[in-house]
Image 1 (cartoon, rainbow, N blue to C red):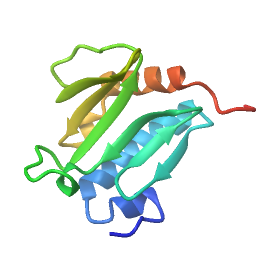
Image 2 (tube, helix red, strand yellow):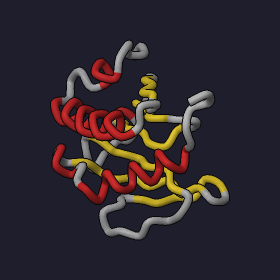
Image 3 (cartoon, rainbow, N blue to C red):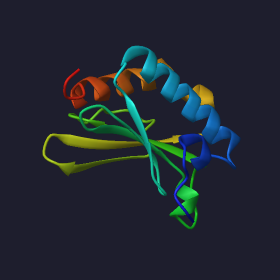
Length: 128
């Protein structure tokens, strides 16, 4: 699979993925003018000074995915919630939270709060 040119290209065959991408991107770019969206073969990443959230398709990596789309959010703390599929600590002071997304409405006020917390902690882009 080649690298998609755009975030929309990453989700070209997923209506749910396109809807979730639109919801996440719209909310973040309305609040943070310096949010960048970077697309690779495996994910769509949101970053400011550093990355703080990614959308990815578990079916491309796992034999039996639980959801079509996963939102992973990097926080400086463990956010306890039964909504998380998995929470891991890849480094001291960094907690990666994985949320299985089944509908665009899953990106609600609680999830937007976590995204905003992660975006603030990632810091502004240099020179902004």
